[in-house]
Image (cartoon, rainbow, N blue to C red; front, top):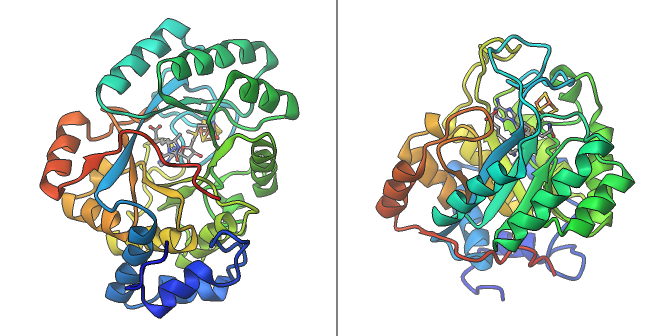
Amino acid sequence: MLDNSLSGNAREQQTGSCSGHGLRHDWSVAEAHAIYNLPFNELLFQAHTVHRANFDPNTVQKCQLLSIKTGGCAEDCSYCSQSARYDTGLKASKLMAIQEVLRGARKAKANGATRYCMGAAWREPKQRDMAAVAEMVKEVKAMGLETCMTLGMLNDEDVAQLRNAGLDYYNHNVDTSERFYPEVITTRTFADRLDTLARVREAGIKVCSGGILGLGETPADRVDMLVTLANLPEHPESVPINMLIAIEGTPLGQAEKVDGIAFVRAIALARILMPRSYVRLSAGRTEMSDELQAMCFFAGANSIFCGEQLLTTDNPGEDADAALFMKLGLEAETSSSSGNMD
Ligand code: SAM
Ligand code: DTB
Ligand code: SF4
């Protein structure tokens, strides 16, 4: 499995102190810091080496998002267009009808997406909505798409209903470091987030968890966030790395843009710490040049959100992504090899 051309350092990172499957869960912050701060070429080389040993470097997974319940959210996440506390001009809507969800899923599949991610602006789902949500999972899955949901915090009963419906992935981001978290969100804690992630994992649903860069965090916060994810008992199968989309009317509406090189460093670190996870270049691609995205793919990103829309904001769309893939010689993944964590 290991390529002889791996540098000593990269090989150690894959084989050192692991849980029998070549993946480590005991990264120290100091170690991760040292990797994040490597000379850029060294970092890229190491990350790409790890990437190649675990994935086809010219294949990128395409996931399509759909907001199944938009706006009016009780939480105060300072980055979010959907919090009821901020005047962002967003119109709130009720839970979408299943036929509309399936229309979107058919279109996503026709455009080459392999995963359909359905998101709701909830602190947590209400029991009365769970039957409809479970039905969405069953029907989308029956179309041959992987299913992902992101509905906020879950209790044991919610998790059981989603698992019984056949949900493949649950997205729940830690968003930032434990230290910086209270500066961004006050209506729930970092520990609440980890709690839901543990419940999802315990139920046998695959985990999608990542964060956002550009919230005003320090490089140390970025490293801490990635170490938290990498030191979970199992790595999340998917790790979305979002670049903040600054939304007018939110407390972070005027936030300073993240430096592109720092963004690539975070992608590379995620790849090295979690060698077999899909690292998703998530929100913020409309603001990124082709060159920056290419560098992210080289550093180990191998998944994107496709289509014209994320949840409430714009995404590059099919034509732009087809042109980008053509320029870079990238292929869309046709069937996911995720869940290959053993
Ligand atoms: N309400 C659920 C929750 O918060 O878990 C699900 C939907 S929420 C919009 C999903 C994730 O989208 C957030 O955790 C955050 O990481 C990301 N996100 C939201 N707004 C964003 C923005 N303006 N820029 C970048 N990422 C954003
Ligand atoms: C994730 O990490 N990013 C997606 C998905 N998981 C749910 C959401 C991005 C949202 C960007 C802002 C918006 O469109 O509202
Ligand atoms: Fe609500 Fe999720 Fe937005 Fe936070 S990120 S305000 S929980 S929709």
